[in-house]
Amino acid sequence: MDDLRKQLFYEKKNGYDLIGTDEHVTAENYCRGYMAYLNASRTEREAVANAIALARACGFTEYRPGMALEPGMKLYFNNRGKALMLAVIGQKSLAEGAVIAGAHVDAPRLDLKQIPMYETDELCYFRTHYYGGIKKYQWVTIPLELHGVVVLKSGETVDVCIGREPGEPRFVITDLLPHLAKDQLKKTMSEGITAEALNLIIGSAPYADEGKDRVKLAVMSVLNDMYGITEEDFLSAELVAVPAFDVCEIGLDRSMIGGYGHDDRVCAYAELRAILDVENPARTCVCILADKEETGSDGVSGMQSSAFDTFMEDLCASQHVELRRCYEKSFCLSADVTAAYDPLYPEVSEKSNDARFNYGMGICKFTGARGKAGTSDASAEVVAYLRRVFDKAGVVWQLAAMGKVDQGGGGTIAKYMANRNIDTIDAGVPVLSMHAPFELVAKLDCYMTYKGVLAVYNDD
Ligand code: MN
Ligand code: MN
Image (cartoon, rainbow, N blue to C red; front, top):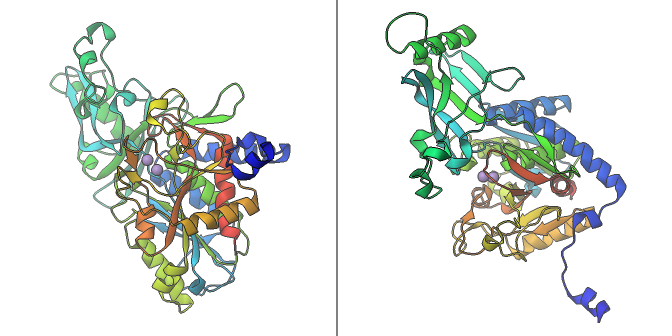
């Protein structure tokens, strides 16, 4: 009976029971690289800049439309500093299709409003407008740092970063003390902290003179000394407040990584590392680091933008291939994180179908909500293809879903790729506390996601 069970039943296995010591060491080294990348990439702009630096160090050069393409060439295209596309030209023509992996490098955060600064009761604040899906109560009483750009009327860009380096000041949003929170505590968790109360405290010492707004004047003077900007310059700024936690190992066994922005920089780094490591692939490999996924993939740097089509069409044109012919033969891994099963909240999960920590790269056949609304739903043929490729390459992977059927749901860039007539499937790292200021992933899953993308890039 045992033999028959083994033969007929499907059983998920913990990745630690499947890999050897050598692979452990490789995974540890890989995760060290990821932790450094994540720690230094707090915004989509920083994620793109750091990715370009890594790519250039690996021999990638900037793509110019019309360039003659040779197999093995390593190219990148920087879309306005907020999104990035990389390609390694394959031995085969693009008429045979490309192998694409797409992740996003934007993450939930607090954007400053365009007129952010105000003083009230001799305290000075920045007003914010949250970006992406957040639980607002998680963003109060944690240290925050400020990143972004101020573009002056002249067009000159001033890079702003306050709070990342040790010794630099940081910011915080206050919350009521429990002693006076009788009414607040009766509210629901979504109403207890309101969007308009998510204001960062930025100063309290008044300017040594008489008149109104003395604290604001003192704070503005500091900013003027540091960056040469005035209050009007905020009109054309993109400044964001992000958690000031360092990325670190979690657990006595150091088997997990805690940090801000795993969604989706953990997959962005996996596919970036994979395309940097690929050599002379059969088909052209393409890696996308997209922006704006957390707000619906709209805009010039989002995955619905024709920036991607233009890049691919230019590559195709150099080989006299029609873009639509390339797309219909292409394959895309939409590399995005998925929800991990949380034993503290089993009621939202359907344990047999949800992803688990240390069970490897999570493959989502579909995302969406309710009756699978808003999903591209990969075909059985596509899943079978991945089973083949991953099993051949020794990738530890699992099928994943987003909790109980009517509990909620989510989306990724997958449908925007599939709508281009590209066979697409979601695949990525299972995350606990997704979209929180400090998210958690398992090292083994991070490494296996890299290995999975590399296996697809290397498949001929
Ligand atoms: Mn995501
Ligand atoms: Mn997300």
